[in-house]
Amino acid sequence: CEGEWGTWNTCSHTCGPNGARSRTFTISTPASSGGVECTEADSAVQPGDCNTEIDCPVDCCGAWAAWSVTCSQTCGGGAN
Image (cartoon, rainbow, N blue to C red; front, side, top):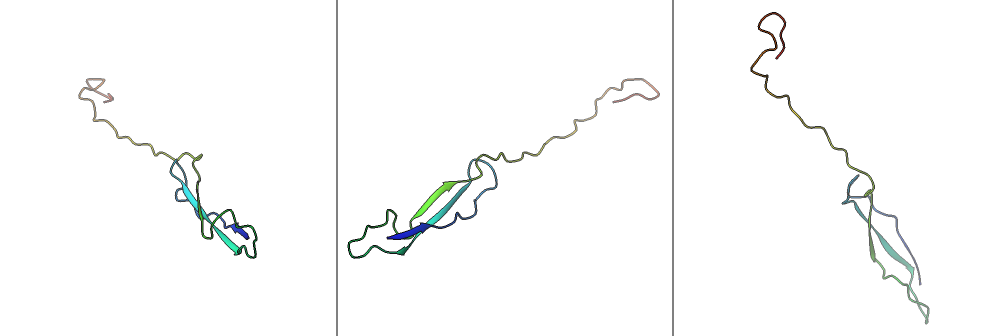
């Protein structure tokens, strides 16, 4: 028997813990006349993790608070 694993398909995620991919085993020459069978079945699928070591970016979130009720000065150039 002769066969090989294909290339990995595209990862399902570009970052984070949930990236998954797979590849398929294809038999090119099946065993015959008493030859040794392949260790994998034709079209066997091998799953794998991917991009799990890449942290996903986290955007900053926030908003300005309401102006304070009191002013720092009673007149002329105070700040809230």
